[in-house]
Amino acid sequence: MRMPEQPWSYGLFIPHDPRAVSVVRPTVRSVLRAGGLNSLADKAELLASELVTNAYRNAHADAFVSMDWQPGDFRLTVWDTGARLPVPRAAAVGDECGRGRGLAIVEAGSDDWGVERHDGGKAVWFSLKPPHGG
Image (cartoon, rainbow, N blue to C red; front, side, top):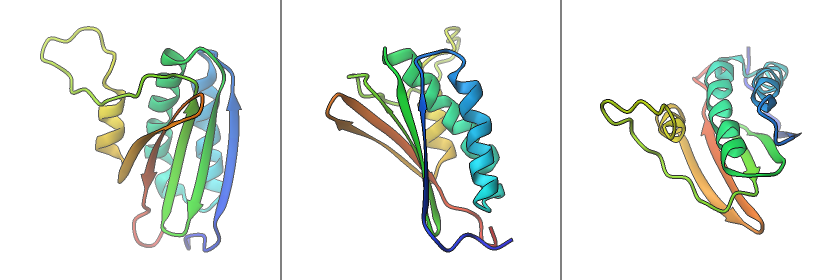
């Protein structure tokens, strides 16, 4: 299958609800399939769930997920109202809390990622480049 040649964007408002991740994951997969980017679906779904979980835990309002394709680059951004800028944290030996490692997963699994402050909160994003051939 050929990679899409035209840019596209999708957006999804998500409520401040613990079930939001269970809505975002299949939505990301469906958008990528519709866009001809099946090769990115597994990784994007995992990384999106990490960002949405962080938004739920660190902000106290609804969030927005944007998915943007520019030929050769898929970017997913989670916009939330949390003031604290996240920093990836490697798991410490014996760390039983199981929290705080999501951005380390995003960092390791994406081609690029970042955090941007904006009025009223922040945007955390990752980008993935498809393998040659889609």
